[in-house]
Length: 317
Ligand code: SER
Image (cartoon, rainbow, N blue to C red):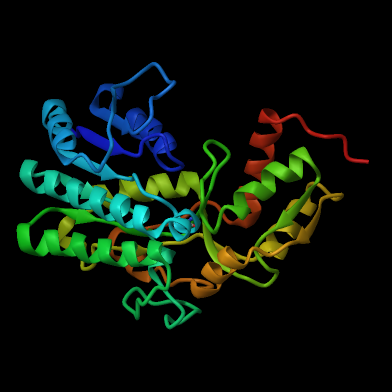
């Protein structure tokens, strides 16, 4: 029986992953932890600052965890604003989580990102194994993280596994401080305002994925037969690649009056320009059967439907 401890449980991925894990493995078998308090009332929850390794160890031990899912991290644009904080949190938190996993013999998952690639990486059909010389602090953290996870597997036998997530889109918990956030904001603004100002330039393609596919991918990878894993940290996965104009056009199919303007943010544009346009996912498909259910059209239908129920639509003339 799985007993899973999740860090960063109130974040963009964590808030939905905890619910999903509880539905699969049972409510009491998932320990949610975060640096701020949860408003939800059901299921085990503990406060945890991931830079506090001793508390992390004590919580995992007391819970009887056999798996650690380490999600607590700063995203790319926030990390650029405060690189030292990003290093301390992203790397310090990861080292603590790996150490606890080594000490308590836990299976381990942490997400990497398309941010682990850089301007010298092939931009189209980016291979699983390729040049990784990112130019952002977030990317430096992610590459170092991938290497550390491989190190803990090779050196100590910790069962570390990871994926390179593309931009993740969801109607539940908004992302904070990412470069791909525009692809979430655009749906909210389409419904609330009927318009959106994109901080990413037209023609800038990035990989993306709808949250239900991301959650399933984590579970599938963690359940995968270890014998079949040639790679571990971390697998390229994606479901779609588009730029602002393509997502706007898809929204216009449902909201014909929706319009978009551009006001480019140089910091996030530079980050986006340094990332691939579309990545190759054959290793994930072959080694653990990765698939995605949602493309841009199907995701857009679901996002607009779910958000329309959540938000008060402004009358579109
Ligand atoms: N969505 C993340 C970001 O934009 C990429 O991993 O920072």
